[in-house]
Image (spheres, rainbow, N blue to C red):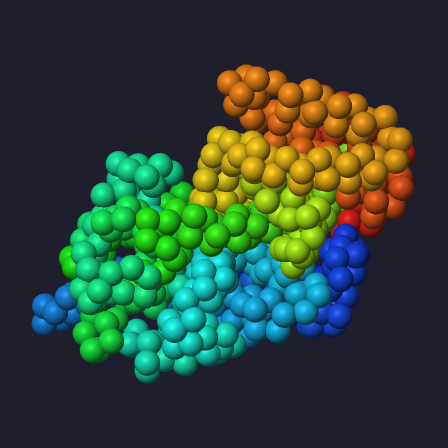
Amino acid sequence: MPWPTHAVTNQAPELQDYNLFTTDAALADALAQNGAGWHAERLQGLGQALGSAAMLELGALANRHPPELRTHDRVGNRIDAVEFHPSWHQLLASLRREGLHALPFIAPRPGAQAARAAGYFLHAQVESGSLCPTTMTYASIPVLAGEPALFATLRDKLFSLEHDARDLPLAQKKSMLVGMGMTEKQGGSDVRSNTTTATPLDGEGRGASYALTGHKWFFSAPMCDAHLVLARADEGLSCFFVPRWRNDGSKNPILIQRLKDKLGNQSNSSSEVEFQGATGVMVGEPGRGIPTIIEMANYTRLDCVIGSAGLMRQAFVQAAHHARHRSAFGRLLAGQPLMRNVLADLALESEAATRLMMKLAAAFDQADDPLQRAWRRIVTPAAKFWVCKRAIEFTGECMEVWGGNGYVETGPMARLYREAPVNSIWEGSGNVMCLDVLRAIGRDPEGAMLLLGDLRDAADGHAGLLALLGGLQRDLRAAPDEQEALARRIAQRLVLAAQAALMLRHAPQDVAEAFAASRLDGEGGRVYGTMAATALQQRILDRAWAGV
Protein backbone atom coordinates (compact mmCIF):
# COMPACT_ATOMS: atom_id res chain seq x y z
CA MET A 1 0.00 0.00 0.00
CA PRO A 2 1.50 3.40 -0.91
CA TRP A 3 2.20 5.80 1.95
CA PRO A 4 0.09 8.99 1.73
CA THR A 5 2.97 11.08 3.09
CA HIS A 6 6.06 9.85 1.23
CA ALA A 7 7.59 7.35 -1.18
CA VAL A 8 9.86 4.60 0.13
CA THR A 9 13.20 5.05 -1.63
CA ASN A 10 16.90 4.56 -1.00
CA GLN A 11 16.41 1.40 1.11
CA ALA A 12 18.62 -1.60 0.35
CA PRO A 13 16.62 -4.66 -0.72
CA GLU A 14 16.75 -7.86 1.30
CA LEU A 15 19.84 -9.92 0.53
CA GLN A 16 18.37 -13.30 -0.34
CA ASP A 17 18.23 -15.95 -3.07
CA TYR A 18 21.96 -15.84 -3.70
CA ASN A 19 24.59 -18.58 -3.53
CA LEU A 20 26.77 -18.36 -0.41
CA PHE A 21 29.46 -20.57 -1.94
CA THR A 22 29.84 -19.38 -5.52
CA THR A 23 30.01 -15.74 -4.40
CA ASP A 24 32.94 -16.51 -2.07
CA ALA A 25 36.15 -16.77 -4.11
CA ALA A 26 38.40 -17.15 -1.06
CA LEU A 27 36.43 -20.12 0.29
CA ALA A 28 36.42 -21.93 -3.05
CA ASP A 29 40.15 -21.27 -3.39
CA ALA A 30 40.92 -22.53 0.12
CA LEU A 31 38.75 -25.61 -0.41
CA ALA A 32 40.91 -26.69 -3.36
CA GLN A 33 44.18 -25.77 -1.66
CA ASN A 34 43.33 -27.92 1.35
CA GLY A 35 42.52 -31.07 -0.62
CA ALA A 36 38.71 -30.83 -0.62
CA GLY A 37 37.98 -29.69 -4.15
CA TRP A 38 36.01 -32.91 -4.60
CA HIS A 39 33.32 -31.40 -2.34
CA ALA A 40 32.81 -28.22 -4.38
CA GLU A 41 29.77 -29.39 -6.33
CA ARG A 42 27.99 -30.40 -3.13
CA LEU A 43 28.80 -27.02 -1.59
CA GLN A 44 27.42 -25.20 -4.61
CA GLY A 45 24.06 -26.85 -3.98
CA LEU A 46 24.28 -26.16 -0.25
CA GLY A 47 25.25 -22.54 -0.86
CA GLN A 48 22.21 -22.01 -3.07
CA ALA A 49 19.86 -23.63 -0.54
CA LEU A 50 21.25 -21.67 2.40
CA GLY A 51 21.02 -18.38 0.54
CA SER A 52 17.34 -18.87 -0.25
CA ALA A 53 14.77 -16.57 1.31
CA ALA A 54 13.09 -19.58 2.93
CA MET A 55 16.25 -20.79 4.69
CA LEU A 56 17.26 -17.32 5.84
CA GLU A 57 13.78 -16.91 7.32
CA LEU A 58 14.23 -20.16 9.27
CA GLY A 59 17.28 -18.64 10.95
CA ALA A 60 15.32 -15.55 11.90
CA LEU A 61 12.33 -17.56 13.16
CA ALA A 62 14.43 -19.84 15.34
CA ASN A 63 15.79 -16.79 17.16
CA ARG A 64 12.51 -14.89 17.26
CA HIS A 65 10.87 -17.87 19.01
CA PRO A 66 13.40 -19.13 21.57
CA PRO A 67 13.05 -22.53 23.26
CA GLU A 68 10.77 -22.93 26.27
CA LEU A 69 11.27 -25.19 29.28
CA ARG A 70 8.46 -27.45 30.47
CA THR A 71 9.50 -29.11 33.71
CA HIS A 72 6.16 -30.93 34.24
CA ASP A 73 3.32 -32.21 32.11
CA ARG A 74 -0.32 -31.24 32.58
CA VAL A 75 -0.97 -33.70 35.39
CA GLY A 76 2.23 -33.00 37.33
CA ASN A 77 4.73 -35.59 36.07
CA ARG A 78 8.31 -34.35 35.85
CA ILE A 79 9.31 -34.37 32.16
CA ASP A 80 12.17 -31.81 31.86
CA ALA A 81 11.41 -31.09 28.22
CA VAL A 82 12.47 -28.16 26.07
CA GLU A 83 10.14 -27.16 23.26
CA PHE A 84 11.45 -25.55 20.07
CA HIS A 85 9.93 -23.69 17.17
CA PRO A 86 9.70 -25.96 14.08
CA SER A 87 12.38 -23.86 12.37
CA TRP A 88 14.96 -25.19 14.86
CA HIS A 89 14.39 -28.76 13.78
CA GLN A 90 14.43 -27.81 10.10
CA LEU A 91 17.84 -26.21 10.60
CA LEU A 92 19.15 -29.26 12.46
CA ALA A 93 17.80 -31.49 9.70
CA SER A 94 19.76 -29.47 7.12
CA LEU A 95 22.96 -29.70 9.14
CA ARG A 96 22.44 -33.43 9.58
CA ARG A 97 21.77 -34.10 5.89
CA GLU A 98 25.11 -32.51 5.05
CA GLY A 99 26.88 -34.69 7.61
CA LEU A 100 28.28 -31.65 9.41
CA HIS A 101 27.98 -33.54 12.71
CA ALA A 102 30.24 -36.41 11.55
CA LEU A 103 31.41 -36.15 7.92
CA PRO A 104 35.15 -36.83 8.48
CA PHE A 105 34.31 -39.91 10.54
CA ILE A 106 31.53 -41.27 8.31
CA ALA A 107 33.64 -41.15 5.16
CA PRO A 108 37.28 -40.46 6.02
CA ARG A 109 39.36 -39.35 3.05
CA PRO A 110 41.95 -36.65 2.37
CA GLY A 111 40.34 -33.25 2.74
CA ALA A 112 37.31 -34.49 4.69
CA GLN A 113 37.85 -32.09 7.59
CA ALA A 114 38.26 -29.15 5.22
CA ALA A 115 35.12 -30.19 3.32
CA ARG A 116 33.15 -30.33 6.55
CA ALA A 117 34.59 -26.97 7.70
CA ALA A 118 33.43 -25.29 4.49
CA GLY A 119 29.88 -26.58 4.93
CA TYR A 120 29.84 -25.55 8.58
CA PHE A 121 31.12 -22.10 7.59
CA LEU A 122 28.22 -21.69 5.16
CA HIS A 123 25.65 -22.76 7.75
CA ALA A 124 27.15 -20.35 10.29
CA GLN A 125 26.10 -17.51 8.01
CA VAL A 126 22.43 -18.48 8.38
CA GLU A 127 22.00 -19.49 12.03
CA SER A 128 24.44 -20.06 14.88
CA GLY A 129 22.47 -21.71 17.69
CA SER A 130 21.85 -24.93 15.78
CA LEU A 131 25.62 -25.29 15.35
CA CYS A 132 26.06 -25.94 19.09
CA PRO A 133 24.62 -29.49 19.31
CA THR A 134 26.08 -30.21 15.87
CA THR A 135 29.57 -29.26 17.06
CA MET A 136 29.32 -31.18 20.32
CA THR A 137 28.16 -34.33 18.54
CA TYR A 138 31.03 -34.02 16.06
CA ALA A 139 33.56 -33.47 18.83
CA SER A 140 32.26 -36.36 20.93
CA ILE A 141 32.88 -39.00 18.27
CA PRO A 142 36.68 -39.33 18.71
CA VAL A 143 36.17 -39.65 22.49
CA LEU A 144 33.39 -42.22 22.21
CA ALA A 145 35.26 -44.16 19.52
CA GLY A 146 37.90 -44.86 22.18
CA GLU A 147 35.31 -46.97 24.02
CA PRO A 148 34.68 -49.85 21.55
CA ALA A 149 31.86 -51.58 23.45
CA LEU A 150 29.92 -48.36 24.02
CA PHE A 151 30.65 -46.98 20.56
CA ALA A 152 29.31 -50.13 18.90
CA THR A 153 25.88 -49.35 20.37
CA LEU A 154 26.00 -45.68 19.29
CA ARG A 155 27.82 -45.67 15.96
CA ASP A 156 24.84 -45.95 13.61
CA LYS A 157 22.89 -43.29 15.48
CA LEU A 158 25.89 -40.94 15.57
CA PHE A 159 26.56 -41.39 11.85
CA SER A 160 22.92 -41.16 10.74
CA LEU A 161 22.11 -38.33 8.31
CA GLU A 162 18.54 -38.09 9.58
CA HIS A 163 17.52 -35.69 12.34
CA ASP A 164 15.31 -37.38 14.95
CA ALA A 165 13.68 -34.81 17.24
CA ARG A 166 11.76 -37.33 19.34
CA ASP A 167 12.43 -37.50 23.09
CA LEU A 168 12.80 -41.28 23.44
CA PRO A 169 15.26 -43.84 24.80
CA LEU A 170 18.24 -44.25 22.46
CA ALA A 171 17.23 -47.76 21.43
CA GLN A 172 14.07 -46.34 19.86
CA LYS A 173 15.73 -43.47 17.96
CA LYS A 174 17.12 -43.25 14.42
CA SER A 175 19.85 -40.77 15.33
CA MET A 176 21.30 -38.95 18.32
CA LEU A 177 22.87 -35.70 19.45
CA VAL A 178 25.52 -35.40 22.15
CA GLY A 179 26.08 -32.41 24.45
CA MET A 180 28.56 -31.42 27.16
CA GLY A 181 28.44 -30.66 30.87
CA MET A 182 31.68 -29.42 32.44
CA THR A 183 31.36 -26.13 34.30
CA GLU A 184 29.93 -25.66 37.77
CA LYS A 185 28.97 -22.55 39.74
CA GLN A 186 32.12 -22.38 41.82
CA GLY A 187 34.64 -22.98 39.05
CA GLY A 188 33.71 -21.94 35.54
CA SER A 189 36.80 -22.65 33.44
CA ASP A 190 38.54 -24.10 36.50
CA VAL A 191 36.91 -27.52 36.19
CA ARG A 192 39.39 -28.97 38.70
CA SER A 193 37.16 -27.42 41.37
CA ASN A 194 34.15 -29.51 40.29
CA THR A 195 32.24 -31.18 43.13
CA THR A 196 29.78 -33.46 41.28
CA THR A 197 30.39 -36.99 42.57
CA ALA A 198 30.26 -40.37 40.83
CA THR A 199 29.46 -43.46 42.91
CA PRO A 200 30.05 -46.96 41.42
CA LEU A 201 26.97 -49.02 40.58
CA ASP A 202 28.32 -52.18 38.91
CA GLY A 203 32.07 -52.30 39.18
CA GLU A 204 34.59 -49.50 38.81
CA GLY A 205 36.65 -47.87 36.12
CA ARG A 206 36.35 -47.56 32.40
CA GLY A 207 33.06 -48.89 31.03
CA ALA A 208 31.44 -49.23 34.47
CA SER A 209 28.20 -47.50 35.47
CA TYR A 210 28.13 -44.80 38.14
CA ALA A 211 25.48 -42.69 39.86
CA LEU A 212 26.18 -38.96 39.46
CA THR A 213 25.07 -36.43 42.07
CA GLY A 214 25.69 -32.70 41.74
CA HIS A 215 25.06 -29.89 39.29
CA LYS A 216 26.22 -28.18 36.11
CA TRP A 217 26.00 -24.42 35.70
CA PHE A 218 26.18 -24.59 31.88
CA PHE A 219 24.70 -27.73 30.33
CA SER A 220 24.28 -27.57 26.56
CA ALA A 221 22.00 -28.56 25.09
CA PRO A 222 19.62 -30.30 27.53
CA MET A 223 17.54 -32.01 24.83
CA CYS A 224 20.56 -33.86 23.46
CA ASP A 225 20.24 -37.64 23.78
CA ALA A 226 23.38 -37.87 25.91
CA HIS A 227 26.09 -35.69 27.39
CA LEU A 228 29.75 -36.06 28.23
CA VAL A 229 30.07 -34.91 31.83
CA LEU A 230 32.89 -34.42 34.34
CA ALA A 231 32.39 -35.87 37.83
CA ARG A 232 34.62 -36.87 40.71
CA ALA A 233 35.13 -40.61 41.25
CA ASP A 234 37.46 -42.22 43.82
CA GLU A 235 40.37 -41.93 41.38
CA GLY A 236 39.71 -38.24 40.74
CA LEU A 237 37.90 -36.18 38.14
CA SER A 238 36.67 -38.51 35.38
CA CYS A 239 34.56 -38.31 32.23
CA PHE A 240 31.14 -39.98 31.92
CA PHE A 241 28.68 -40.67 29.13
CA VAL A 242 25.29 -39.72 30.60
CA PRO A 243 22.21 -40.58 28.47
CA ARG A 244 18.94 -38.71 28.76
CA TRP A 245 17.11 -42.03 29.26
CA ARG A 246 18.26 -45.11 31.18
CA ASN A 247 18.46 -48.53 29.54
CA ASP A 248 15.30 -49.66 31.34
CA GLY A 249 13.30 -46.93 29.60
CA SER A 250 13.03 -44.62 32.60
CA LYS A 251 14.09 -40.98 32.45
CA ASN A 252 17.58 -40.41 33.83
CA PRO A 253 17.23 -38.00 36.79
CA ILE A 254 18.84 -34.97 35.18
CA LEU A 255 16.62 -32.13 36.37
CA ILE A 256 16.61 -28.93 34.33
CA GLN A 257 16.46 -26.01 36.76
CA ARG A 258 16.15 -23.25 34.17
CA LEU A 259 17.28 -22.17 30.72
CA LYS A 260 19.94 -19.50 30.46
CA ASP A 261 18.70 -16.07 29.39
CA LYS A 262 21.57 -15.30 27.03
CA LEU A 263 22.75 -12.25 25.12
CA GLY A 264 22.78 -14.18 21.86
CA ASN A 265 22.60 -17.75 20.60
CA GLN A 266 18.96 -17.54 21.57
CA SER A 267 17.68 -20.37 19.40
CA ASN A 268 19.81 -22.83 21.38
CA SER A 269 18.86 -24.00 24.86
CA SER A 270 21.66 -23.74 27.41
CA SER A 271 20.63 -24.82 30.88
CA GLU A 272 21.39 -25.34 34.54
CA VAL A 273 20.82 -28.90 35.76
CA GLU A 274 21.05 -31.09 38.82
CA PHE A 275 21.98 -34.78 38.79
CA GLN A 276 20.04 -36.74 41.38
CA GLY A 277 21.79 -40.08 41.06
CA ALA A 278 21.87 -39.95 37.25
CA THR A 279 23.39 -43.01 35.59
CA GLY A 280 26.59 -42.51 33.61
CA VAL A 281 29.23 -44.75 32.06
CA MET A 282 32.89 -43.87 32.59
CA VAL A 283 34.78 -43.13 29.38
CA GLY A 284 38.52 -42.70 29.32
CA GLU A 285 40.91 -43.57 32.10
CA PRO A 286 39.77 -43.10 35.72
CA GLY A 287 40.92 -39.77 37.09
CA ARG A 288 41.80 -38.56 33.59
CA GLY A 289 38.58 -36.74 32.87
CA ILE A 290 40.17 -33.44 31.90
CA PRO A 291 42.52 -34.90 29.25
CA THR A 292 39.60 -36.96 27.95
CA ILE A 293 37.30 -33.96 27.62
CA ILE A 294 40.12 -31.79 26.23
CA GLU A 295 40.23 -34.11 23.22
CA MET A 296 36.64 -33.09 22.60
CA ALA A 297 37.43 -29.44 23.28
CA ASN A 298 40.14 -29.38 20.60
CA TYR A 299 37.44 -30.03 18.01
CA THR A 300 34.95 -27.61 19.51
CA ARG A 301 37.59 -24.88 19.51
CA LEU A 302 38.12 -25.42 15.81
CA ASP A 303 34.39 -24.94 15.30
CA CYS A 304 34.50 -21.72 17.30
CA VAL A 305 37.02 -20.41 14.75
CA ILE A 306 34.92 -21.62 11.81
CA GLY A 307 31.70 -20.23 13.29
CA SER A 308 33.26 -16.81 13.96
CA ALA A 309 34.72 -16.70 10.45
CA GLY A 310 31.23 -17.48 9.14
CA LEU A 311 29.71 -14.63 11.15
CA MET A 312 32.36 -12.29 9.78
CA ARG A 313 31.69 -13.36 6.22
CA GLN A 314 27.93 -12.85 6.53
CA ALA A 315 28.37 -9.50 8.27
CA PHE A 316 30.73 -8.32 5.52
CA VAL A 317 28.42 -9.50 2.75
CA GLN A 318 25.48 -7.72 4.37
CA ALA A 319 27.53 -4.53 4.71
CA ALA A 320 28.78 -4.67 1.12
CA HIS A 321 25.27 -5.35 -0.20
CA HIS A 322 23.88 -2.43 1.77
CA ALA A 323 26.64 -0.08 0.60
CA ARG A 324 25.96 -0.97 -3.04
CA HIS A 325 22.29 0.00 -2.73
CA ARG A 326 22.26 2.88 -0.25
CA SER A 327 23.06 6.46 -1.25
CA ALA A 328 24.19 9.27 1.02
CA PHE A 329 25.27 12.81 0.15
CA GLY A 330 24.53 12.22 -3.51
CA ARG A 331 26.54 9.02 -4.04
CA LEU A 332 26.24 5.30 -3.36
CA LEU A 333 28.03 4.40 -0.15
CA ALA A 334 30.15 1.84 -1.97
CA GLY A 335 31.46 4.55 -4.29
CA GLN A 336 32.71 6.81 -1.51
CA PRO A 337 36.48 6.57 -0.86
CA LEU A 338 36.35 6.26 2.92
CA MET A 339 33.57 3.66 2.88
CA ARG A 340 35.49 1.75 0.21
CA ASN A 341 38.52 1.75 2.52
CA VAL A 342 36.44 0.34 5.39
CA LEU A 343 34.82 -2.37 3.26
CA ALA A 344 38.08 -3.43 1.62
CA ASP A 345 39.73 -3.67 5.04
CA LEU A 346 36.85 -5.83 6.29
CA ALA A 347 37.15 -8.02 3.19
CA LEU A 348 40.82 -8.70 3.92
CA GLU A 349 40.07 -9.60 7.54
CA SER A 350 37.33 -11.99 6.46
CA GLU A 351 39.47 -13.68 3.84
CA ALA A 352 42.35 -14.18 6.26
CA ALA A 353 39.98 -15.73 8.82
CA THR A 354 38.53 -18.01 6.13
CA ARG A 355 41.92 -19.20 4.94
CA LEU A 356 43.09 -19.82 8.50
CA MET A 357 40.05 -21.87 9.53
CA MET A 358 40.36 -24.01 6.40
CA LYS A 359 44.08 -24.59 7.02
CA LEU A 360 43.41 -25.63 10.62
CA ALA A 361 40.62 -28.00 9.57
CA ALA A 362 42.96 -29.64 7.05
CA ALA A 363 45.60 -30.02 9.78
CA PHE A 364 43.11 -32.07 11.82
CA ASP A 365 43.19 -34.59 8.96
CA GLN A 366 46.97 -35.02 9.15
CA ALA A 367 47.67 -36.08 12.73
CA ASP A 368 50.73 -38.12 11.71
CA ASP A 369 52.55 -35.13 10.23
CA PRO A 370 54.56 -33.30 12.96
CA LEU A 371 54.20 -29.92 11.24
CA GLN A 372 50.44 -30.25 10.75
CA ARG A 373 50.13 -31.48 14.34
CA ALA A 374 51.80 -28.24 15.44
CA TRP A 375 49.37 -26.19 13.36
CA ARG A 376 46.52 -28.07 14.99
CA ARG A 377 47.71 -28.00 18.58
CA ILE A 378 49.51 -24.63 18.74
CA VAL A 379 47.70 -22.43 16.24
CA THR A 380 44.12 -23.56 16.95
CA PRO A 381 43.90 -21.95 20.43
CA ALA A 382 45.64 -18.83 19.10
CA ALA A 383 43.11 -18.66 16.26
CA LYS A 384 40.22 -19.14 18.66
CA PHE A 385 41.56 -16.25 20.74
CA TRP A 386 42.10 -13.90 17.81
CA VAL A 387 39.41 -14.70 15.23
CA CYS A 388 36.62 -15.00 17.80
CA LYS A 389 37.64 -11.74 19.44
CA ARG A 390 38.00 -9.93 16.12
CA ALA A 391 34.50 -11.08 15.14
CA ILE A 392 33.03 -8.92 17.90
CA GLU A 393 34.60 -5.72 16.57
CA PHE A 394 34.07 -6.83 12.98
CA THR A 395 30.30 -7.35 13.28
CA GLY A 396 30.00 -4.03 15.09
CA GLU A 397 31.78 -2.27 12.24
CA CYS A 398 29.50 -3.90 9.69
CA MET A 399 26.46 -2.86 11.72
CA GLU A 400 27.74 0.70 11.59
CA VAL A 401 27.78 0.54 7.78
CA TRP A 402 24.03 0.00 7.99
CA GLY A 403 23.63 2.90 10.39
CA GLY A 404 20.40 2.98 12.39
CA ASN A 405 18.89 0.25 10.21
CA GLY A 406 21.58 -2.09 11.52
CA TYR A 407 20.71 -1.47 15.15
CA VAL A 408 17.14 -2.74 15.00
CA GLU A 409 16.08 -6.35 15.43
CA THR A 410 14.07 -6.45 12.19
CA GLY A 411 17.30 -6.71 10.18
CA PRO A 412 20.12 -9.29 10.36
CA MET A 413 22.91 -7.14 11.80
CA ALA A 414 21.74 -7.05 15.42
CA ARG A 415 21.58 -10.85 15.59
CA LEU A 416 25.03 -11.22 14.02
CA TYR A 417 26.44 -8.78 16.57
CA ARG A 418 24.79 -10.53 19.52
CA GLU A 419 26.08 -13.90 18.31
CA ALA A 420 29.70 -12.79 18.04
CA PRO A 421 30.82 -12.86 21.72
CA VAL A 422 29.82 -16.45 22.50
CA ASN A 423 32.63 -18.14 20.57
CA SER A 424 35.19 -15.97 22.35
CA ILE A 425 33.86 -17.18 25.72
CA TRP A 426 32.78 -20.77 25.06
CA GLU A 427 35.39 -23.52 25.46
CA GLY A 428 37.85 -21.16 27.09
CA SER A 429 38.00 -17.38 27.09
CA GLY A 430 40.89 -15.32 25.75
CA ASN A 431 43.34 -15.77 28.62
CA VAL A 432 42.70 -19.51 28.77
CA MET A 433 43.43 -19.82 25.04
CA CYS A 434 46.63 -17.79 25.19
CA LEU A 435 47.96 -19.80 28.13
CA ASP A 436 47.06 -22.96 26.20
CA VAL A 437 49.23 -21.72 23.33
CA LEU A 438 52.17 -21.47 25.73
CA ARG A 439 51.45 -24.95 27.13
CA ALA A 440 51.28 -26.42 23.65
CA ILE A 441 54.61 -24.87 22.71
CA GLY A 442 56.18 -26.11 25.94
CA ARG A 443 54.97 -29.65 25.34
CA ASP A 444 56.07 -29.75 21.71
CA PRO A 445 59.11 -27.50 21.25
CA GLU A 446 60.17 -29.44 18.14
CA GLY A 447 56.74 -28.89 16.61
CA ALA A 448 56.94 -25.19 17.48
CA MET A 449 60.27 -24.94 15.67
CA LEU A 450 58.78 -26.68 12.62
CA LEU A 451 55.86 -24.26 12.70
CA LEU A 452 58.08 -21.18 12.91
CA GLY A 453 60.20 -22.57 10.10
CA ASP A 454 57.11 -23.09 7.96
CA LEU A 455 56.06 -19.48 8.55
CA ARG A 456 59.55 -18.24 7.68
CA ASP A 457 59.47 -20.24 4.45
CA ALA A 458 56.13 -18.67 3.57
CA ALA A 459 57.57 -15.21 4.24
CA ASP A 460 60.06 -15.79 1.40
CA GLY A 461 62.01 -12.71 2.40
CA HIS A 462 58.95 -10.55 3.19
CA ALA A 463 60.35 -7.96 5.59
CA GLY A 464 57.16 -7.34 7.53
CA LEU A 465 56.45 -11.01 8.24
CA LEU A 466 60.09 -11.73 9.10
CA ALA A 467 60.09 -8.82 11.56
CA LEU A 468 56.90 -10.12 13.19
CA LEU A 469 58.39 -13.62 13.50
CA GLY A 470 61.53 -12.13 15.04
CA GLY A 471 59.44 -10.38 17.69
CA LEU A 472 57.53 -13.58 18.35
CA GLN A 473 60.72 -15.56 18.88
CA ARG A 474 62.05 -12.91 21.29
CA ASP A 475 58.84 -13.17 23.32
CA LEU A 476 59.17 -16.96 23.42
CA ARG A 477 62.65 -16.63 24.92
CA ALA A 478 61.36 -14.60 27.87
CA ALA A 479 61.41 -15.98 31.41
CA PRO A 480 58.30 -18.06 32.29
CA ASP A 481 56.60 -15.39 34.43
CA GLU A 482 57.21 -12.70 31.84
CA GLN A 483 56.14 -15.04 29.05
CA GLU A 484 52.82 -15.63 30.80
CA ALA A 485 52.26 -11.88 31.03
CA LEU A 486 53.01 -11.65 27.29
CA ALA A 487 50.72 -14.55 26.37
CA ARG A 488 48.17 -12.41 24.54
CA ARG A 489 50.87 -10.67 22.52
CA ILE A 490 52.42 -14.04 21.66
CA ALA A 491 49.09 -15.46 20.51
CA GLN A 492 48.31 -12.33 18.49
CA ARG A 493 51.69 -12.33 16.79
CA LEU A 494 51.43 -16.05 16.05
CA VAL A 495 48.01 -15.86 14.45
CA LEU A 496 48.82 -12.72 12.44
CA ALA A 497 51.95 -14.45 11.18
CA ALA A 498 49.90 -17.53 10.26
CA GLN A 499 47.29 -15.44 8.44
CA ALA A 500 49.93 -13.42 6.59
CA ALA A 501 51.76 -16.61 5.59
CA LEU A 502 48.57 -18.16 4.21
CA MET A 503 47.69 -14.97 2.32
CA LEU A 504 51.20 -14.67 0.85
CA ARG A 505 51.16 -18.31 -0.20
CA HIS A 506 47.66 -18.53 -1.65
CA ALA A 507 45.94 -15.17 -2.24
CA PRO A 508 46.64 -12.95 -5.27
CA GLN A 509 49.93 -11.18 -4.66
CA ASP A 510 48.54 -7.65 -4.49
CA VAL A 511 45.77 -8.71 -2.10
CA ALA A 512 48.26 -10.57 0.11
CA GLU A 513 50.58 -7.56 0.16
CA ALA A 514 47.68 -5.30 1.15
CA PHE A 515 46.88 -7.60 4.06
CA ALA A 516 50.50 -7.77 5.19
CA ALA A 517 51.05 -4.03 4.89
CA SER A 518 47.98 -3.25 6.98
CA ARG A 519 48.41 -5.93 9.65
CA LEU A 520 52.12 -6.32 10.27
CA ASP A 521 52.81 -2.72 11.26
CA GLY A 522 52.61 -3.39 15.00
CA GLU A 523 49.26 -1.63 15.34
CA GLY A 524 47.23 -4.64 16.51
CA GLY A 525 44.52 -2.40 17.92
CA ARG A 526 43.93 -0.53 14.65
CA VAL A 527 40.41 0.28 13.49
CA TYR A 528 39.07 -0.82 10.13
CA GLY A 529 39.37 1.62 7.24
CA THR A 530 42.96 2.78 7.72
CA MET A 531 44.51 1.05 4.72
CA ALA A 532 47.03 2.93 2.64
CA ALA A 533 46.56 0.90 -0.56
CA THR A 534 43.71 3.05 -1.89
CA ALA A 535 44.17 2.12 -5.57
CA LEU A 536 43.67 -1.57 -4.80
CA GLN A 537 40.55 -1.31 -2.69
CA GLN A 538 37.96 -1.65 -5.47
CA ARG A 539 39.68 -4.79 -6.77
CA ILE A 540 39.65 -6.27 -3.27
CA LEU A 541 35.92 -5.58 -2.97
CA ASP A 542 35.02 -6.89 -6.42
CA ARG A 543 36.87 -10.13 -5.68
CA ALA A 544 35.52 -10.52 -2.15
CA TRP A 545 31.83 -10.21 -2.93
CA ALA A 546 30.61 -11.40 -6.31
CA GLY A 547 27.02 -10.67 -5.32
CA VAL A 548 24.35 -8.37 -6.65
